[in-house]
Amino acid sequence: MPELPEVETIKRILEPQLAGRTITRLILIRPDIVEHPTPEVFADTVTGAAITSMDRRGKYLSVLLQDGGRIVLHLRMTGCLLVTPPNWPEEKHTHLVFHLDDGNELRFIDPRRFGRFWLFRNGEEDTISGSHKLGPEPFDNLFTADYLSGALSKRKRAIKDCLLDQSVVAGIGNIYADETLFVAKIRPDRAASALTDDEWQRLTDAIPVVITQAIKANAMTPGEYLVGKGQEYRNTPTLQVYGHAGEPCPRCGEILCRAVVAGRGSVYCPTCQGGSSC
DNA sequence: CGGCCCCTGACG
DNA sequence: CGTCAGGGGCCG
Image (cartoon, rainbow, N blue to C red; front, top):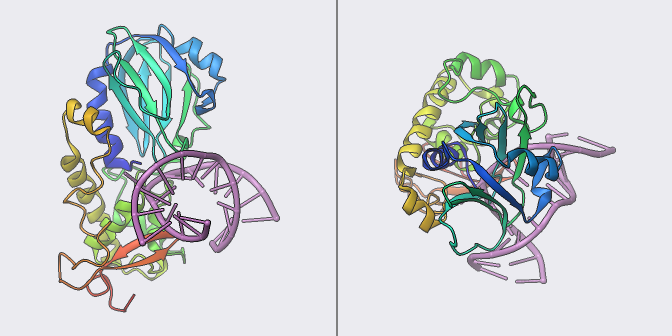
């Protein structure tokens, strides 16, 4: 479900509820959600572990443990993490339940079951989850127009496709690729190699702005998050084009069009993002 | 690179 | 019934 802003939102909501807690028991309803090590070792190791904090890198979340180990997870398309009171009704597709020492439970819910968990013990390097292949965060000082054009200006593929490459910049998915390209006034299907210096600059500027705005717009209380099951961010008013095909462009009033770019549904303004028709 | 796969649910 | 969905890995 989530891209960087949503994962960050989840982190900010959950971290205060998890920091300082100890995991007393893990129920592995669907052990195949655990990628590493084995589900049994995963359960044995996290049982009794104290949680110190959480971390986010791109779309990955980590739960840091006092002993130096960490749980790494990726929610993929439909994964959801909830901290619930005891006896909170169990959602369909609940696959993991971490019992905590305050009686609450951390539950992993995922209808499509694409989400995955890994555990790395103190000193164990993560070379398997994919988080080690991530490019810079959008807020990183390394994320500059020179960096972006240097990484992409020889690629002939669509710029949108390039933005979805997590090794170039971490955390952008289908929604925020469309949103950032809209703000930067670049059509999603433009070849990366055809972008001008000015366009690289606009795109580099747009990305952290759009992401920051979305994190702000997503903010909610733990209560709101629990009741809404973390599904409420999709129609955020800050989304200017994603989900708005057929509606007027918020900038020029032209009808936003939809096309398939890089195999993904894409929405853009045919007028202010570049000129030609859909 | 494109194409297919992992899954379920919503929608036309 | 078919198609699509916020993700990513793997395959030739």
